[in-house]
Structure formats: structure tokens, C-alpha cells
Figure 1 (spheres, rainbow, N blue to C red):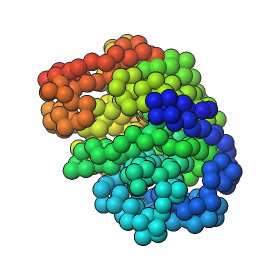
Figure 2 (cartoon, protein in one colour; figure 1 turned 45 degrees about the vertical axis):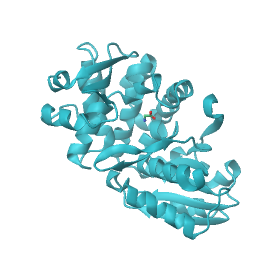
Figure 3 (spheres, rainbow, N blue to C red; figure 1 turned 30 degrees about the vertical axis):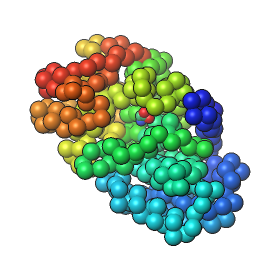
Figure 4 (cartoon, protein in one colour; figure 1 turned 120 degrees about the vertical axis):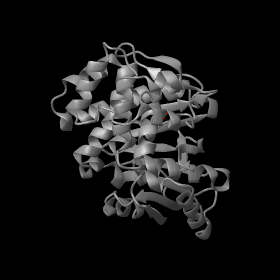
Amino acid sequence: MQINISSTKSYYEITHERGALSKVAKIVDLDRKVMIVTDSGVPEEYAQTLSKQCKEAHIFCFERGEQSKNIDNFLLILKEMLKASFTRKDLVIALGGGVAGDMGAFAASCYMRGIDFVNIPTTVLSMVDSSIGGKTAVDFEGVKNVVGSFFQPKAVIEDFDLLKSLDKRQISAGLTEAIKMAATCDKELFEFIEKSNDLDKDLEEIIIRANAIKKMVVEEDPTEKGLRKVLNFGHTIGHAIESKHNGELLHGECVALGMTLLCSEKVKPRIVKVLEKYNLPTLINDNMEELSEIMKHDKKAKKGNISVVYCPEIGSYEFKDMTIDEITKLK
Ligand code: GLY
């Protein structure tokens, strides 16, 4: 699958191939210095398999979890690259989930005004969504993704064999992003996820079909001026829940909760049913006033109003501006 971002003249390939991790050198030039950004949750042998293929590999391994997506770790990556005399010709590879991808890409986008970046996602969430489309960021002062840039990777390599180390909870949390895309943009994919009774068998197809949606969206709107906002379905409330629970709930679990409040009466039971099928949470126990307070700091908040994505019918979406008061009353 090839992504063409014409405004930035970025064309990159998403490779979907079991076993691709051991063949990265055939896809990307590794005959240079490579900074591998990974986390403690990723099996060590993945980084070893990759580093063996590089001329000079450096591994930056941070503690797994959203709390690591911070300026301190971002600076540590840059320091390591500077200490090892990385030049503009060298490369950063993220090998992990959304945190490794966002932070590794942000470091690549800033080092010497931008060096090559490749994403090798190891989670369902990052394969489905975050590895594609060039969003980079770290969290700052308690606000998620508030410091970052748009910076397209040179390649995305999706090796489905890497998913075997994930537990069921992480797989389900990642699946939320595919459910989000299907609910708003692809009725057939939503029905496929609804009907699936063997996720092990169907996961690959779900990821590839979700990638096709993401490709369509980011090619049309790489910097989120319009259409790309659709990918925020469930995220406005989801991010607030995530901030409040500070790492206790996974990102996908928070997005699942967020989706249940921003859909029509007709759509809600279908979304809830599909989320429950994958053991995802569907009932918000937090005080909505408290969540609204957090939402005011969201990038999507403008002049006291919050932009949200609403799903009136499966396979369609509306953008709405809601007041804090309206959000507080959502049920
Ligand atoms: N994860 C949402 C986006 O890439 O826009």
C-alpha cells in the first residue's frame, strides 16, 4: 500500500508482511547510524533482530507507558544522537507502540531540522493508526500531544508476527482505533468487525482495511485542517479520561468510552455491543464536569467550545462544536 502526501511530496510504502522485521535492510537503507527507539514492553529480541541489520545501531529503550512520552525522554534521544555524532544522513526507527512512534518521530523531525524516520509498529494500535500519517508529539505540562510536529516517515513496516507478544487487553485496546474508523468511514468494515468470531484470523484483514481508511484520510488532509479530524472520534472525551486516570486505562479503552457518548441513539447499541465483545469499557464512571474542565485545555477547544466528531449512522460522521455545558450533559 503506498501513501502519497502530495503537499509535502512524501511518498511512502506501508509494508504488510509477516517476518518483515528480519528483512528491514531489504526495505530501508540501514548502512548508516540508526537510533532504535523502543520500550521495555517490546521483547528485547525485536531490537536485536533489527540492530543486527544496521551498520551502527544505538538503542534507546524507555519505560513502557504514556508517562514516558515526555520532553525529558525526547531530549535524551537527541543527546544520544548528538553524542554518537548522528548526521543528516542517519536514521531513527521507532520499534514499538504509539509512544515510541510519536516520540521517535518527533526526535527525528527536530534533529538537524529533520532526519529520516521509519516506523515499525509492534502494537495493534500503532499498526492500525498512529504509525501512519506523520503525527509526532510528546505530552507536556499534563497536556497530551501538545508539543509536536507533522513529519512523514520514509516507510512503515507492519510485521503481524510482532503482535504475538501482546496480551488480549492490548489487542482489544488497539482494535478500538479500527472500530473508530469503521464506525465513521466504512460501514462494511464495521459489519465485518461486528460479525467476526475469530479475531486471531481476522485481525490482519481488519488492520489492512483500517490502513486503507487512514491512507485515504491523510492523503486528503495531512495536517488536520478538515477531514482528518474524523480520526478524533472518541478522542475528545477519551483524552480527558486518559489524563484523569493517568495511565490506569489504556488509550484505546479511553477512546472506547469516548465513542459511546458521541453517537446517535440508533448507533450507540451497535458500538457498545462491539466494544463489549472485545471486553472494552463502555460506561463512564467519571464526573462529566471534571472531564469537561480537562477538555478545555484540549487542542480541539476553541473559544470555550469543543469540536467533536459525532456518528449519526454507522459509516458516517458529523463535526460539531459543542459548549462545555452540552458536553457535561452527555449521557
Ligand atoms: N491518530 C489520529 C491521526 O493520525 O490523525
